[in-house]
Amino acid sequence: MAETKSSSEHSQPGPAPASQISNIFGPIRLLPGESADIYKAGLIGTIKELGATTHLQTYLAEKIFQCLWWIRRYEIQKQACILNEMVRLASKFNTSESTKATMAQKLQDHLWDDKELKKIIQDAGHTGQSLTAKAMTEVREEIQKLDMLIALRVKTLGQLQQSYESLVSRSVMQERLKLQNELLKRDLQAIDIPAVEQANVSKSASRGQRKAMSGQ
Image 1 (cartoon, rainbow, N blue to C red):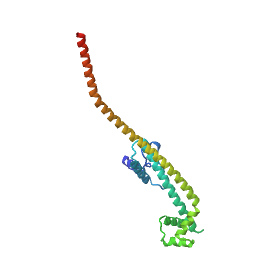
Image 2 (cartoon, helix red, strand yellow):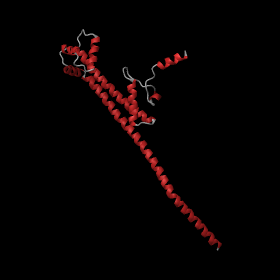
Image 3 (cartoon, helix red, strand yellow):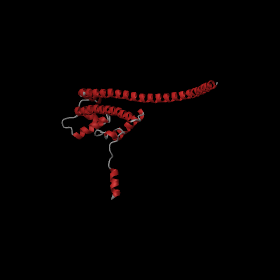
Image 4 (tube, rainbow, N blue to C red):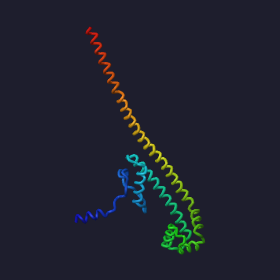
């Protein structure tokens, strides 16, 4: 029975992947349809690429990747808006939902030479190019809103990158200063030892002279 329970526990899906900072704040929240494996691979790649080692560096690296992930989400949403509008424009009042779904999938896969898809587009009075252009015009406002959101994320991304670079530069500078101080201390010690020995010899000679003079 215990073996069965153990096997069952191992078969349960684990929590969403998380960085060491996410382990503190909780699991990563992904939207439906998003791949946890892709997110994890991208996050780990970003942390390695930036060379993040401390908690603060890792946190900033994670925020940088999250900005990139949101930009990707908005780009996917833009594509979905255009595809959905293309399906709407090419559909008739009696077009079934399954046909619409098939049409959307073929459009997403760029199967422009598919006979069924070409016929649907032609029956709607369009070519592939004209249908795309018409759909983009119809959803222009939505695309502009998404572009504004992308621009905000890009701005935030730049600020996070500057913060990370400042943090890393400060850490490197601190290490350099520490090394320089150690070298300077070592050099001073090497200089001071002969100086101290010379001073001790001078003091001993002075004491000897005073004793000699007092003895006279």
